[in-house]
Length: 184
Image (cartoon, rainbow, N blue to C red; front, side, top):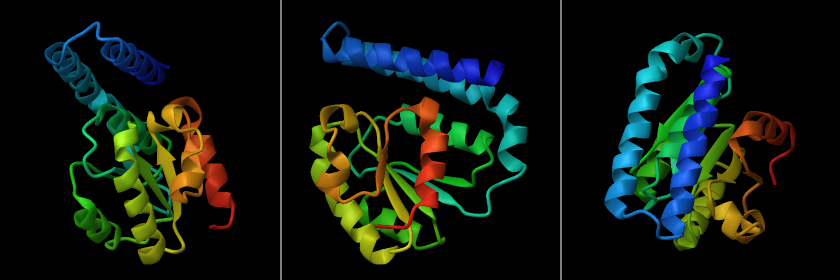
């Protein structure tokens, strides 16, 4: 129960912070300081979560990656922790450029590749990355997550992804459902 509560509180705080940022109620410095505190909370609780991360891993790995140029990492960290607690073998890729992401993806045979983007400005690098992954990993399910979905509900069709993950609460069940479907 404690583990799930932290997720709800931290995710709620991040959402509120994003709303305040969008409506110009807080400055860049305020957002940066607040995000730093949220990261400290997540990292401080990892010792509680760690036993569940290393036991009973899925045999099929997943890669969660920020789209090149994306700077908002809190959501992907929360998602990675959530999936690992549920037994998934997740590799998280943050801060890599396009070519580095493709090279990292080539190291394992991923069943699912979740690409996280938060704004319309990520549309071009997201589309480019989906296309490259379709060529290099034709058997992987490519899924889009992040706030870009709120701006572009049709993002899956726009970039050629297999599915989207709309919210963290249903993310695990959504991805499990996607893996049961044939690759597009």
